[in-house]
Image: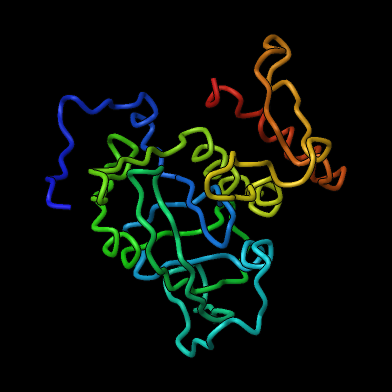
Length: 232
């Protein structure tokens, strides 16, 4: 793993980078592919939100107590639920790495599922580029590049602006992951509802959780349609 990591003229610059989108990627942990993972170079800890912790099938008894409150959120310091160490895989074979990550578990509303902070990024020897909306890191198979999803990044950002973190967080965000097999969607297809983002573009479909409460589903659809131009 002695190759040099560089970003140069051969690396594509997505149009979305003009809007200064965040880098939002997927990871694999506890046999699930987890979406809405925010690459946060400004965070001194790696954070997992409690609802995701439970969706992964983990129990409170697996948490190690954390006595130091977490600073940096709006308002007073927040006491974490605890800490758990999970093996996390980033990238696609053969260019991938699996590392242990000490997640601080927070019981807070967020459109994101996980914040990958400096500890995980340093363990990966990762170099993020917000211009290229991607992260590069060394692996035994060569330099891996994981690209962010600008559509997901926009949806999460808009949710924060509108105060709709709780609604957006309830959309499908985990997929069972079995090494060597095709990734399967969590639950059945009946649990996913597709609807056109714009009336003049019936082919432009967005997927949300079918089992959302009716009021939250209506609010989420209205939010996505209100900002449909950013998904074009």
